[in-house]
Length: 55
Image (cartoon, rainbow, N blue to C red; front, top):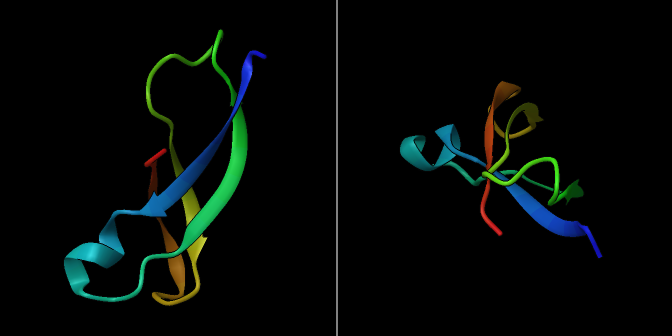
């Protein structure tokens, strides 16, 4: 299977001591070998922040 389940976790919330928001999704391992970084909405901070793949 080329698709893999991943978890995206907020990087800015950890630094501020707030709860980190998480998003779940899949990625194609053949096209994206590295870790994914996306700007997603964090409801705890009420703004878009950088989310990095953790799994």
